[in-house]
Length: 235
Image (tube, rainbow, N blue to C red; front, side, top):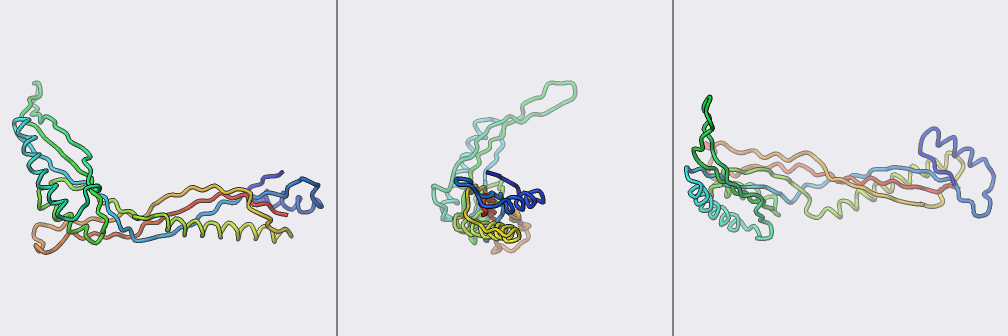
């Protein structure tokens, strides 16, 4: 069995194999390895954001209490916006001292900073701007994101996979035809894929914007690619 990469050296090896006469019993044909990539794009339909509250107070307990009160309002706003409980998850809670630094002296604690952050999945991309505005109105003073994705990626991956298969088959047939051979079968297939695309833009309006305006979000497109490594047998 000969395994050759698709290159000038591979063409020479295939030519020698093609001119070598008929195969002996049990001997397999020449194998050719081909890599191909297929891509498919869709407008993302799901958004992931993080929102949180940061509060400060001279006393650590007061900082946490104030944070809890604001966070309760924020959670109510999230549920009022129609976000399911399964799509809301606490991602971080912290309490840290605030220091005052002076030359040639030990830093002095002057207060405490409390933070509470949740991750939110918005499954209707067209409602994302309104959700962001609702979070800000409810007291969120930290908002990060969005990270946009395709909610059901498998159909898009299937399209990219089919494209990669067709590309690999065409290449194998081209090599076989140029050498007076034909493609007998696919010996093996291995796959790896990735999701990428332009990062969506989130633009926050200034305070002077109209009260009925919502934060605009440009979803762009998300591209899914599938890379296939195939081995064909030629005869």
